[in-house]
Length: 465
Length: 103
Image (cartoon, rainbow over all chains, first blue to last red):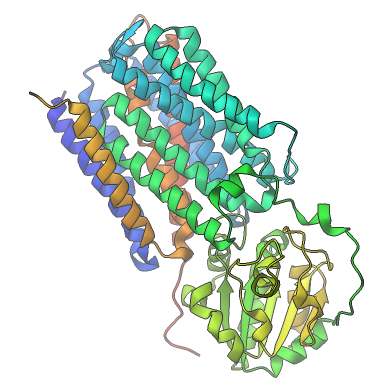
């Protein structure tokens, strides 16, 4: 057994290694090393925990068994998961962090002696407050992430589920959580603890159901943040610096990502959370508008346009992920490059279903990351480019956001695709995007619509090049 | 008067939020997905609490309600730790630079 002071120092070391793990992500070159630091930090934390408890009874074997069991499931998932399913995977992982926090809180509540927190029925007040906050946030993270997972997976409809009195109901439940924590701390009643958990599960569920599928980037980042705060709450209970540091890091990381995503949609955080906006295409697609003429073409036309271009900018969106078109796209770009055509990729902050979703898919298809640009970096280049190839994106290219103050997406930063000499727009139909508004780009003189599945169209173009 | 140790932990917490704030802003947007998966993995350091709970039994009571919740939490956190780090590694391995020797 090692002393409490020594183990505290080791926990601090692993906390610092976790900071370095995130720091490494500032560039792809240092990122792999960063991930390695994270792994080392985790190993230190786990080994120190073993060493600091002098109880190496039979329980030790079971701890190892459960680590190996969970570890092999995790490793299996990590190797099998397709990159297009990353949003679901991350949502699923969030739910596990939340549930683990709840379970640790339950274990600590039932057996506080093991954690030096007092005895059942007389847990130290501070610890009880920290524990119940950690448990409540963990429960919200769990049920919220499960709903996010189901929506992303398509098991549950992506359209927002709203009902009358939703917001007052949520407000009442949130208030009751605070009251319950207060009562729990003054009475130490186990029943109140279970009720608190139940109510927290319920509010997590209710908070996420009104949020539409296309707002998932914000939801996932937000749940990421919650899972951090839950970990920090438990960290305070366990008086563990590694957990407190990590919780704070993850909490602020998720909060920043939510902020970036909201800014990418020009919506306030509360606007997203209150929900009821981001339905999916299919729902509103059938709204009939006056028919405006569009120019549509086939793969041959598209190939002709691109062959005669000197620079092409690709704008990928969620549709590319759905059609799994990233590899076909890379092959098309390879062919273009052989013809000495300059190609770059433009990524909107909210393209896809989670932050950085498109970048990962392109990386998977072996697109070098220095050909991929963010909105601010590339937006001025559209005016000088010959062809913009929009594949599976829609609202993020809609010029209405700049011109029409009445539009729901007015003010949202968009890619200036319309400034290109010609625009190729791969889409299955003319239906509007998730914002439910028509894209002016479809009707522009220099736009050629390619109505087809993204993957098939890309392959056909490659054949014609 | 002595300072409550809670204040020290609170200081660590607040300072870590600031560290997190500045570190995460410096993360390049193209790595935001790996950022999420790695934060998942590291927040599962909550496994230390689960291990303490799991080891709290003695040879007569290896399985009490408390240790069972501990064991379950260990399994959940382990899924996340292994899954999170490995999937991050898998993603990061795909980020490649343009080859210098252009054909």
